[in-house]
Length: 355
Image 1 (cartoon, rainbow, N blue to C red):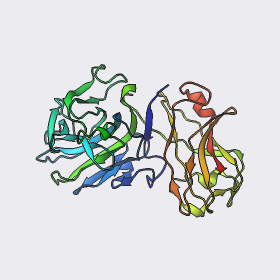
Image 2: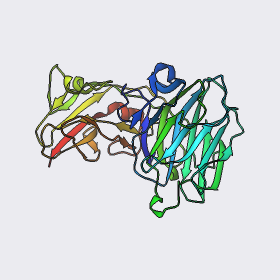
Image 3: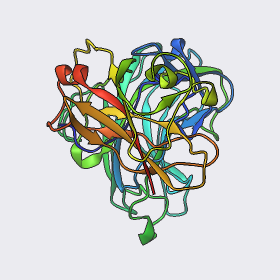
Image 4: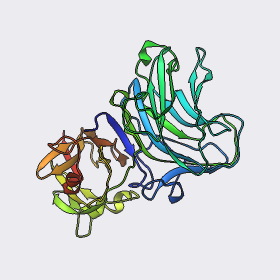
């Protein structure tokens, strides 16, 4: 069981990356580390991407794969990761300097950025690294731990850390209301730093509670739908309901399933995977709308041999489609953790309820 996972992303299942708050980076094969796609930036400027909001917390870990392919240097740190919230306040960032060393920046008492620690390991150009950043928030005694290509374990205990600094300000200010201040992260070449030609790539993200520890080097893959298991919804056209919703680019009302029946549910078969690593969690994301003003909710569903796990209620928008928040399932239905056999036996889908 991998508790405390808030979000995962490998950029395989949605070419428009609609689950992200903002996507200024390019999704392409050129930026992929695992699977077919990653995100990145090439050239001048400061495009960036913002993760979906996750539940507000005062301590968090974000893991991601990163590659710098820039031969040129620059005069100051370029932020490659920032922790934000609430709203758009940046509290801490990890940057890459002209020597390709990672550094941790945090705020001082007046809100200015201060370099708090620098790694001793230089990152090679054109090489992928798996970076995990653990942050404990506090107005004066905060902590940041950065691990590079490391194993799973409690931050500070695995021997793979290149930075572990405490006693620093990891909130933008000390207002008690900001005791839990993190709810999103940003990646990309950030505003305010040298504008040089560079190529950077990101892939294979996870977000987890700090107390649950690092997961170590991870890959995020997508699973395809391949058939109907049981369906209640009416499809627009075609022979199968799954074909109406199995989309890399959501096409809204070009293909869809619909129902006005309370407790209607569609469950679809998932293609088998040969993934050889540890399976920490499965994430489902739905995109939906309602066409009338009555209250309707939608839940994602996982089915394993008739035993189901059901996600939280999401009140459907009217009249436009909306990508709903990701649902992360750390356990197979009725079980603890995940095995490959369980993953290959599940069905996934959604159900609706009126009122």
